[in-house]
Image 1 (cartoon, rainbow, N blue to C red):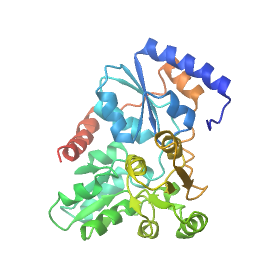
Image 2: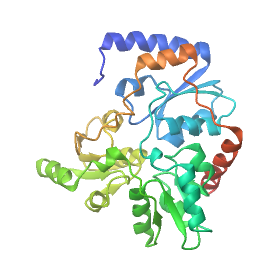
Image 3: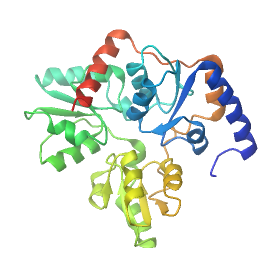
Length: 308
């Protein structure tokens, strides 16, 4: 156990949350980057879009999304009939904030006919102004599905550059990035590799290009977990947010995992606490909603992706 609270407090809060969850007919979702104790009280732990899809398939009336704002918005896009709660309303995503709808519209005016591939790590408004969404696991497939040369990838230039390199295509890249993944340097990888020479390097494609170049495997958060689970290797240097280690140790208790840098911590993902989850269930707030006209357009970009 690597909780930030005592075991007694965890058990007390977990019981209270379980009772409230039943009263509210709620489902609790937690992203892989959440605190360990949050992951352990969740009904589903996973990547953001996968979680929203799972919640949409349940008969729950309330979705408590332990993640950041755009994730709760995605749940609201897919489940307009459910109450969506984000326990910490200030938990945002700096990368998602690096593109806004006004800036995107201005770009589209400058480049008429440009096709916009929007990473799911973005606001509902930005999704609504885009042509198709993608995730870190299917970005290559989504870009591959588009014909023509004028393709803009937003907002993560690192993921866009990774997809472009795999496909040997030229993409227009929006100047955005994940601040947490961007902190990781090649020197960090080399330092940990020196201490653990037998360890494989597994990283998220939100990392810089220099990190991807030295990786043994590049994949989404769920992809990294599956790779470690199925690999014959016993040691891994992990290049993504620290919260993933909790699930890696659960899935592969016999294997060893070394975080590539102690700086791989997203402060926004760590804002959610058990107390905030409990209070959210009590008050059914803070609630995240999406205006219907934006919801319909944004959902269409997700549906185009899912149709692939």
